[in-house]
Length: 123
Image 1 (cartoon, rainbow, N blue to C red):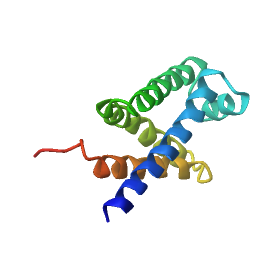
Image 2: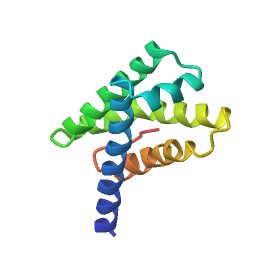
Image 3: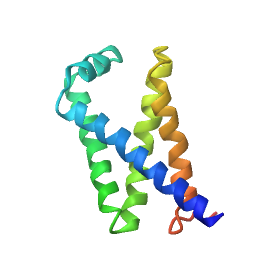
């Protein structure tokens, strides 16, 4: 069972890194389709770039987390509000074909934190 948990954790990590990686770079480098999509959601150029920078910081922390696990958890906690925001924005604008990645990111956040041996929530 521990092997399955480890595999699920690292597959989730890889997909998390992939989705946030390309989304952040598309925003920071102002890819036309991303800029138009963000504009349709009500975000101007400045907000889109700021969101992209926030996501890019999270992606960099995810990569640093390969060597220092506490940064990986910090990155996941930093990126979670972006996933929730994306999910909310796409659902409120009835863009159902775009919300799947955001929904998956929300679910993967829970999976990544639950399967990480160095992360605990104390109540």
